[in-house]
Length: 273
Length: 356
Image (cartoon, rainbow over the protein chains, first blue to last red):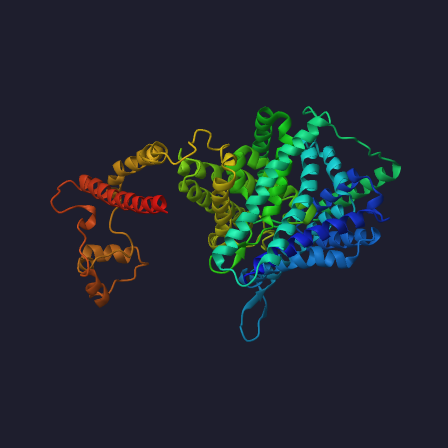
């Protein structure tokens, strides 16, 4: 890692997160199937399908749920390219590395022997790896669809239907807002530091630089917390929180809720061993 | 360490949600009582900070980089209860919004990192830092150790959760349904990366931030050290501050004769004369898969064993008749030597700091 590598790596991470947030906002505004549904329907439906994918003991059922997720994405005008780069590639790389040795290490009937190396590929090992990778990809795709097709503030308000305390819903909403603010602040700090850094830094200097940046962010955090509190008080906040419930369920939403629950239930039933 | 969906069975996920729920409930109730209307801004902003710090690429010794979780610094600045909530909120947003960690596995991730990590980091930091002054170097060491050990505890919990999956969850054909590796593979594989990289990243962040706060914002270290003096006073940093450690050490010294209960010598710690004793040879073979030891003493062992003769061979000075008293005396002597070295080093470094 070069002397500027950690600065570059962190800046890239900040930029990716900001791009991610902007793209999600843009996709959530499109005219598509999932975008048109009540956030509570999407939340319950998606969670049900994720649960069905994790409980299934049949690969065919997990594959069917994955196909359903792709169909929902297409009907919601979510480009497959977005899913491919943001979800599938990452999940496949991370889980693929973990699942690959299981192909050789899991005892079972021999399926094939690797040429040159002679490692045995077992049928049980292949099924083990397929379970892990397909489950991870399906659950990640369904979760990502929920977020890509619903504004974050609506996802949070929908959490009330799961009996999440209202104070936590408010905290989650504020946290998301301040995450974007702090990512921007951290990126500016790192970029200004990069532009002022000439030559190579030794490892100790790089560590001190990273820790100082975290320290400055921490002190800003505490100051911001005080400022936000005073601003809330100035607007009449006395500790009680309320969330406006602007969602309205119509007949179409009830039909979709029933359909998604039925699909999830059918997948759980079909996925039994 | 962020477990995605699909690695843990639904029953494991449900059990870990249930295990985390009481901690979330108690944290929320305690904080609502203590902070009242300040709760929402403090937790929101600190959770955002934790989230952003998780994205930092920490440069580590050896030229590599790693990501910290930030759980130890959250516990040190906010205390364990607020840290449990702040880290849980950051993990929830990571899972739902950025797809880092699963929704069904959120309970497990929160239990491993937010609950166990926060409580362990807080306990380790408080025990090691004791009541030393806010500006003491011991706080920096305590924070580093708290970060390193708490992240490794979280990783160990995750590894155990992975490792028990193939024991309980297999399909009709015997293929593991979730994380495929047993404990003997999952634990070393998980711990290797955390003992060498992730733990070090957390230690660097926690120790570095405490050192930075000591210089810039010492008041932020007050929440978890309410009675600590501001400056390096002898009363604060001296022996009274480490009294609990000394009491613990004394208890350990007193129970050292328990070592006599063990029969035979430890595997691989044989002396040259053990190879000539038929009874000991039988013991060695019995604990070595019935592999007979060599009939003559290995030349290297013979040569090197003569290089140094211990003053207390076999933990019992030759002039003592009581083996128990010998153990006690050896332990006291050894611990005393270590304390002398520590005091000497402290004097040397304190002198340098004073003159610097």
